[in-house]
Image 1: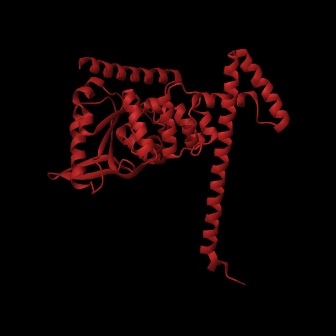
Image 2: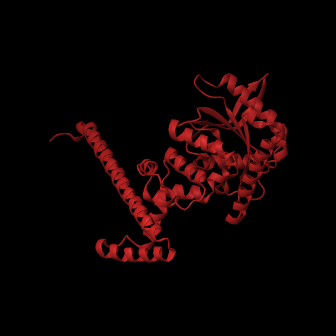
Image 3: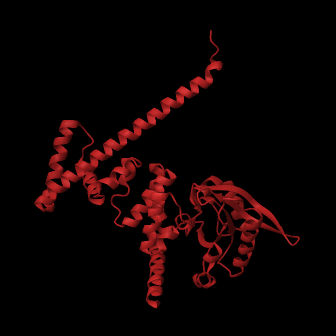
Length: 346
């Protein structure tokens, strides 16, 4: 009898080939199905546009659904046909769509075809492709208003377009696509009264969920990392490395609102890492100060981004979706107003 242990490498190789083949088949089937849905949607849309009557559109979808289900069985409901039409309406350019359907499933695509803001839609498409989100994670990211919480949403439209284009064509990731505000830390289970040590300890306990909130390219390196400057010890709360930005990221945890003194402390940490820890090929370290109030004018006057420092709120309990939407949309509106005011000054 041949010892099966002697042939484990062969078995593993064959198993890997089968798995790769199955994956390729799944991708091919998904692309074919999604292409079919776009073509169906485009054909229906053109038929409806020819008649230019909304009630005709409703009639043709209902009639088509009945005939298709009679011919092919379930799966061709009126709702599904509406999704197909919306798909073709949202994405008119077939070349763009053909690239997308090779990387996103139909279940992914259905989550974005009703988004009215094209920049928001492109953001989710590119970030999903980059981080390879499952449908569940994709849905969670949209529901948590990730785009509105990401720094890029507060930039001028042209900047957003350029950054997304660089990510798409050159796989170049701008930090504004990585860092968020606020961060949702409701999973830590903290009550109204807690200390910085409690916050840090609970983050370590829930480290995987914390990294999920930060972004999948963050890798944990150290907690309370000791550095010595002029014979004096300092301790960095949390140290991460971001794989795509190719840099160290310091996270400083604070209770309460941002204080001006936090900048000097973070600058000291960053310059130390830059001098003693940064290795060849890495980019300059970035500092993220997490607090529960930003004091916007302080942050604006201190020009923290010039020092590679970012400040963000964190929430240990979430408001209602309506309150959150209002807060985030207001923050974006204020940021855009400031941008327009600066343009007028020039």
